[in-house]
Every structure is written in structure tokens, then in C-alpha cells.
Length: 197
Image (cartoon, rainbow, N blue to C red; front, side, top):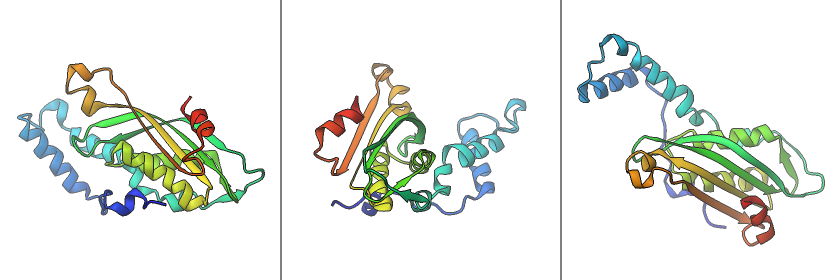
């Protein structure tokens, strides 16, 4: 099996956030744009932006896929498990603009299954970061193999990429789909078609 993307050096190591440096950075950013950060309507903007980035946009760094999938149950019949339309967002590391959409997950259990809400948290963990859609798609599928010992796994993501849609009018209505099929799902066309429909 090929190495998981996180083993290929793509994930930035994130240290504990420094709230004061975040606030300073936002103020400098506004000043650099020529916008006075002490203007009446901007006085609390640095605090609001800092909270948004730490608590909403990049909160995925608080979670660990191994821990999220550690609370599992014995698998019964081993049928394919599919969870569709998990809404998520991520932040493109190239322009620091969001992308957002839905993820569809599937895995074929060997011995273990987890609660559906844990699968939603797995998506949140690996997308609420500075990441690429392609990378998050692969990381989610690999996490199901690695931490659940699944026989096969898959992740399909459909998104709107603001770094693409906002910057050029010809791409204003474009969307992006990425897929990853692993293990027994890699060459199983009926399962793939079921997830892609």
C-alpha cells in the first residue's frame, strides 16, 4: 500500500497558537492594505478575526484521527458503510481562501465500526486546516484503513474553491471533485459507482 500523504511531508507542523501574535498580524495586515485598524468599524476586527480562525476555520488541528476512531464496536455482517453529504470547509494554503462542499465516505469493515458522528468529526479534523482538497481526500481514506483496519475505504469530495472562483470570472461557477479509493474498494467498480452516484 502506498504511503499515506502525511508521510510525504505535506502537512505543516502546527505549534500552539499565539493569540497576541495573531492580533498583531491582523492589525499589520489591515495597515498594509492601507486600512486604519483603529477606525470605528474595525476596532474589534482583529479579535473577531483571530477567534474565527482559531475556533472555526482551523480548529481541525485540535483533533487527532487516531483518537476520533479509537472508540469502535465489533462489525456485524461486514457490509459496506457509506455516509454521504458531510458538509465541511478547508483553507487553501496557497491563497488562504476557503473551499467548501460535501464529502462522501465509505469503508468496508473487517472487525471494527465507529459511530457515524465520528466519521463527521474525522472530516472536520482533516479539512479544518491549511490543506489541499486532494490531500484531505487521501488523508480521510487512509485514516479509515489505518485506524479501523478496514478492508477498503473511499472518500469523494465535491467543492467550490474560492481561490479559483473569486479570482477569475471564467471560473466563477466551477466546482472540483476529488476521489480516493483504497484496499478492496480500489478496483471494485460497483462500490465506486455507488459512492459516486
